[in-house]
Image (cartoon, rainbow, N blue to C red; front, top):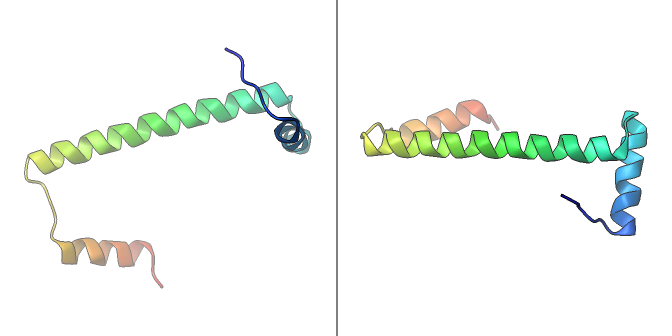
Length: 74
């Protein structure tokens, strides 16, 4: 598989790779692999949420609001 970047994108990738001390191709490969891992985790979480909803394992809106407030205090 080949991926093509604009010259500006290549400059940006080279700057990041240089800063990180790795080859630009390795930087792109690692980024793509992280994307695949994140996608897999996200899809699994969605499937799990759908299964829980199908089984009636839901929480009330007030409880969800409280959880969000605990996670992200203002």
